[in-house]
Amino acid sequence: MTETRIEDVARRRLRSLRLGRGWTLDDLARRSNIGASTISRLETGHRRLAIDTLAELARALETTVDELLADESDDDVVIRPTRRKGHDGAVHWPLTRHHDPSGRVVAKMRIPASRKRPDQRVHPGRDWFYVLEGTARLLLGERELLIEAGQAVEFNTMTPHWIAGYGGPVEILIIFDRHGEQAHLVPTRPPAAGKDS
Image (tube, rainbow, N blue to C red; front, side, top):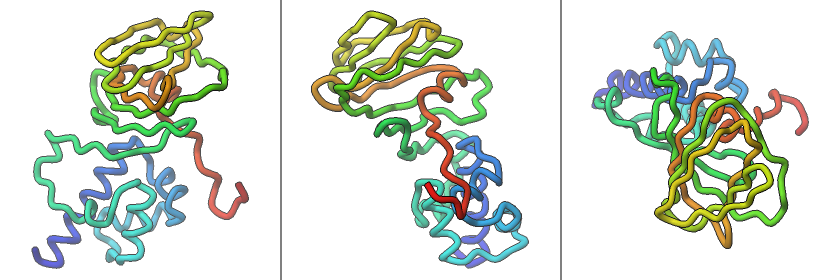
């Protein structure tokens, strides 16, 4: 590939990964400590890409420089899940695009076991999940349910709820709407650049 072609691929991938996460330029700027206007110029070709800048952007996007440089001509069809950190040590791999017209979000999640009884969450909508591996502990209102590999559950999310592994981590395939995405997948925003944690 020529240098120009490599830069074009990196620009498209940068924008695609940012938008795929539902992030604005400002969101990526906060996570990478690179100005939003600089990121915009990088994406549009008005600024040359430097390897150190690509490394910072890749880190913020939880990917690699190699992934940013990969020539993926099937991005409009193929979803390449990337590992993302969530709440309380959970990690997830989004399996739908952020802008999915159905409003549904599908993700694979790996949730650690937890002994503490947490504050349960509520949000509009319904959650559905299928246990791929391990056993899930579901607190649903006053009920405690153990869901084993090969079993699925569906419930109204206005009932206070919480999910964790039982006896070890659990891997689940989960489907919910945007309210569920905000409640279960989106970690708290990092502090603004230059602020103490």
